[in-house]
Image 1 (cartoon, rainbow, N blue to C red):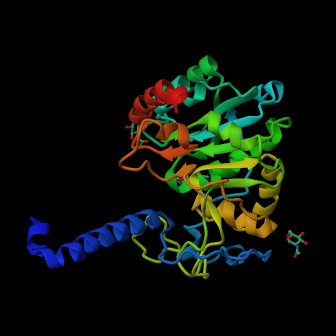
Image 2: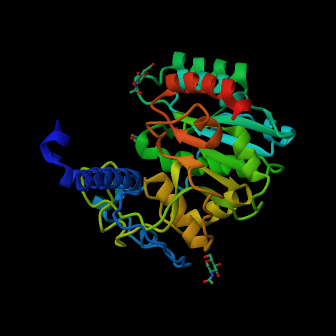
Image 3: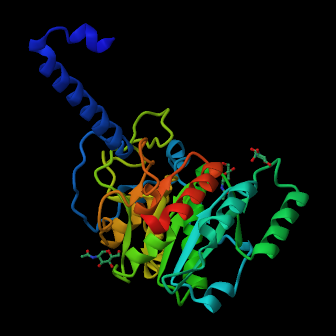
Length: 342
Ligand SMILES: *[C@@H]1O[C@H](CO)[C@@H](O)[C@H](O)[C@H]1NC(C)=O
Ligand SMILES: *[C@@H]1O[C@H](CO)[C@@H](O)[C@H](O)[C@H]1NC(C)=O
Ligand SMILES: *[C@@H]1O[C@H](CO)[C@@H](O)[C@H](O)[C@H]1NC(C)=O
């Protein structure tokens, strides 16, 4: 219909086709850049100064809601004190998940969480929980979590309240746990529970990667600070006056060499903890003067699967965001069935 309206007559036909093609390309490009939340993607040089977020006074009450209580001596109330150093995995997968989300944990245990030996390397996973919010924080519920932990030996629970605004605390507690429990491991990945993960492809990449001061994932460079107060990731000028963030790896899935855990914890003493978890890790990295590494090629870490994809897509990516855990079960079947033929 639209084509008929615009494209009557031989003379204009080619012009029309070109126009539709260009329009399509533009839509495609803007769609793909959208995740960086910025219109101009620039590479930024690194510097070693303490971020301005580190120098804001806590007396400023309007700003304090954008900071979280870290560092702070949180405790592990459910733990696996010996498992990681005994098994000495090459790669530890750390999955932040809400306490009530038992379903997501079970799906992961039956899909990529099952991959315990890959290319001759040991891989293990742990779920990271805070205290469940009121309503679910009953003794009965906590007992269920404890039973689940005894059954699967893969749950770690700490004493902060598990909420979206406390995700930075969860991530920092993850670095604490890794640095004190996994002395013999080389890499860890923080990966969200609604992600597809191709562990084979990930280990394959890591076998060729640096083993020290290394962090990779989908690295956002020159991402704009969101100043619209209704945005999910809003930060006011008073908290972070720079207009762009330093490079950071998007929080849904990033990989790092384990020597970084201690370094990032060290930096966190100097960089005030903002509630945006992945940005905060990026601020700590800048403080340390350590650059993030892009993956060896594009498309390994993805924000979403392309609308049109073949069954071999799952063998070609390391990780991508999915709609939910149900989708993970379906996708995993496709991946398993097609992997050897791709
Ligand atoms: C960078 O920051 C670290 C930690 O604060 C400090 O020890 C180091 O001397 C700094 N390096 C430079 C080049 O300023
Ligand atoms: C409590 O748990 C249920 C699932 O068991 C969940 O749907 C609900 O969102 C939870 N409520 C809070 C406040 O976390
Ligand atoms: C975590 O989040 C909840 C609600 O979002 C808040 O009440 C609590 O004080 C936060 N901090 C800690 C350390 O639990």
